[in-house]
Each structure stands twice: as structure tokens, then as C-alpha cells.
Image (cartoon, rainbow, N blue to C red; front, side, top):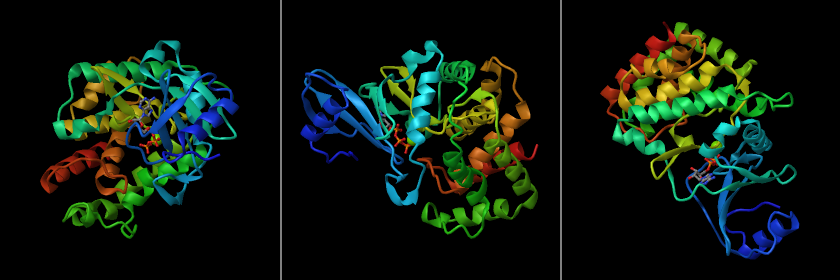
Length: 320
Ligand SMILES: Nc1ncnc2c1ncn2[C@@H]1O[C@H](COP(=O)(O)OP(=O)(O)OP(=O)(O)O)[C@@H](O)[C@H]1O
Ligand SMILES: [Mg+2]
């Protein structure tokens, strides 16, 4: 059964009773807890409590013509199971999971918003950076179970959006629709064969194998804030890979928030384990490039001059 925000409360109640996920509980209403594109995410209010249901589809929920692997929710489930117990308080807990229905029930973090607001604030505190790196260290320290999903189909989709499409001139996406003049700004990067060959190589690293449990999408859209605490959600892009990918992505977003490349050093200093510093820089560079000249845009309102500066920083990081 496919559910969404239009499914009647009594039908959700029957489904959850049939699954044995609720007993003497009455579902009062179903709401949407926050913005999301990929999946159906619902907040279920009962006469006892509220909780979250997340269901994946064989397509991107907001853009049904875009296919996406339906078993991505399985990755998310396995991620939460694999976590170091020390992390349980900064992430939602899985309450129940049904593989056939691609459905997961999680604890409700309550009324919180994601940290995409940081792009407009243009700053992030040293304490927040430390908290986010500490959480990432604990994720990376979690043992990868033998049966951990490779998540390759979803990674291939992401690979296209990070390492390929942004660097193709005729990718069918007119950047001037985002901001007049952005298309022209993107051209030197799309024509730079040296840059593109490094990016291609980095893409191969992303698709390859590794030994560290990655979140896979460690950026402000996955960071939730509630009463001053930061929670991390949405690990559907997780896989066992190079730690430098999560670190590079995180640093890239700190650089886009603050326009300061020094954030890379802050992240590396706080990260307690061995790492390939150059690889972090390179993944960070690609992430900045793709977020400015690619299809997966951010709520990043910056002048063309500011974007030019960010793109230059990014190019330098990839090509070091
Ligand atoms: N456990 C939770 N508690 C409270 N709110 C939540 C919880 N999980 C998700 N949300 C809210 O629902 C939104 C969408 O969730 P999530 O990011 O997991 O969905 P998604 O479809 O994978 O999104 P995206 O397309 O951004 O990847 C979140 O931004 C958040 O506002
Ligand atoms: Mg998601």
C-alpha cells in the first residue's frame, strides 16, 4: 500500500494495526513534518503520541518521471541499525520497518527545522562545527556490518548529479533560469578538460568501495535543529566508502555558508582520524562546483561576483 498526506487517518490506522506497529491507539491526523523531495515523509498524530513514517517509491516523489531505486529506504534502515550506540541521541530511532512496503517508522524529533537557513545567515558557530564533526566521527567509527547495502543504484544517480551533469555544456538545464548570467559563468568549468578529468577520477572513487560507514549526504539539509541541539537525519545515500567524501561535502557547505576556505582546516583539525587531506579538498571542490553550476541547487542567494569567487576557490581545491 502506498501512503501519502492524502491517505485517510483511519486507513493509516488500519495499516499500522495490521502491521502490528500500533495497538490501542487512534490515529487522529497525518501531516507533513517538513520539506523533502525524494520520499514520502509523514508525521502521524495519535491519541498517545506522534511519530514519523517514511516510504520510498520507485521514483523521486516530487518528480515522478525521475526513476529512483525503491530500496533506498533499506539503506536508511541498515544505517540506523549499524550506528554506534553513542549516536542514538542525535538521530531518530527506528521504531519499525517493513521491507515489502518500503516503509519505516521513526521517532519524531519534534518541531525542528533543517539548517538550510545557515546559507542566508552566512555564518555558523565554532560550537556547531565541532558538534557536527564529532557526530561525523562517531558515524565513521561505527562498524560496517557484512551485509551492508552497496546502495550502488542510488549512488549512480547521485554520481550523475555530482560528477557528470554539472560539467556537460548541453545538459538541458539553463542556469540563467536560476540567475541571469550564471550559465556564462559556468562555461569555463564545463570546457576545462583538465578539471573534468580530475572530477571524473573523483567520481570513480565515489563509485568504488571503501571501509568507512558514510552518511552520504552530510550537508545542512540533513542537519536538524531543535532547542539548540543538532540532530542528523536522512542517511539514504549511505554506503561504505572513503571518509573524505563526507568530510569534503561537509566542508564545502561550510565554505558556501561563510565564503571562507579556512573551514576546511577546521574540519580536518577536529576530525580525529587519519585522512587524505588532498582528497577532502577535492571532494569539497566538486561539491561547491556542482551546487553552483549543477542541477541540485541550494537556497544560496549570492551575487554572480560571490559565486565567481566560490567557483574559483572550488577549482583550486579540485586542481591542487
Ligand atoms: N524523525 C523526524 N522527526 C521530525 N521531522 C522529521 C523527521 N524525519 C524527517 N523529518 C522532516 O521531514 C523532512 C523530510 O525528511 P527527509 O529529509 O528524511 O526526506 P527525503 O524525502 O529523503 O528528503 P530529501 O528529498 O531532502 O532527501 C525533513 O526535512 C524534516 O523536516
Ligand atoms: Mg533524502
